[in-house]
Figure (cartoon, rainbow, N blue to C red):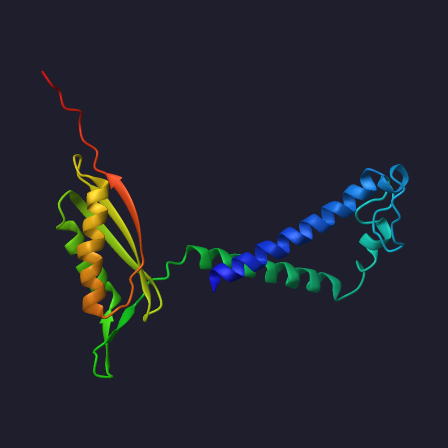
Length: 198
């Protein structure tokens, strides 16, 4: 859902910026006179000398009692929404539990953290893997794995990926009764000192 909200907000912000930029650009370049561009009477900027906010508009509501509280409330709402959006971006959405189909019409619940630890331990036992970290995301009925593998200096990345898919993820799918367990894998190599050959 957060991804959809981000796309909608970015689309609206982009459309608003393009519309405002086009309105200002048409007036600033005096396209009405140079190109004979017919502009409607409501167009905000008809001439390069037009200002963004005329003096009358700037001073219109200044002496009204409701003006400053309304401005402050609007700015506070915008600030709160911006903070909420930022925290939503930073929050890690981990799967707290996974629903396991027992095959007899009943379902069991496995803690997401326990499954992550089991996946990490099995991945670390693979040849060439020095360290493994696993995080589960998504819905409890369709989790997704994010795997970070740190490979030993002489490990083969393709072999480590093959073993991860064929053994670790396959065991997790079978034990949890999942049809699929998509995984995003990040590989890093363990740093080591250069070896001297004589």
